[in-house]
Image (cartoon, rainbow, N blue to C red; front, side, top):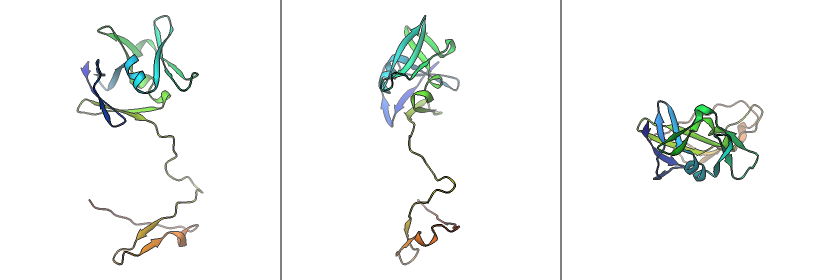
Length: 148
């Protein structure tokens, strides 16, 4: 297993022990990591642990036998085993950085029949604002481009 750098909500964490990588899986020091993300690690059976959200007593994710292990006396949990259930997302980067963030609770995008938002953009050339009000309720195609 190889040590990882943890980036939580865009901020690098420097705790010991560090998360570990095994193949495409991330393993985190369970009690330390749980505390950082508003959860707690609890013993929920004979040698079986769970990750429980502090703000929701009923949400406790039990870890299976293959999802927990001791490394140098520290309990580690496989991140994929509980991350989604407690409202987190994670990404393991090629440069051994583990990025973790909270799942967004907002709805992104429009569904069929949803009213699109009002858009005002500057017209190419004159710079006058052009509104989308005149196409609301009608089929429309917006052609936009950007350059950096």
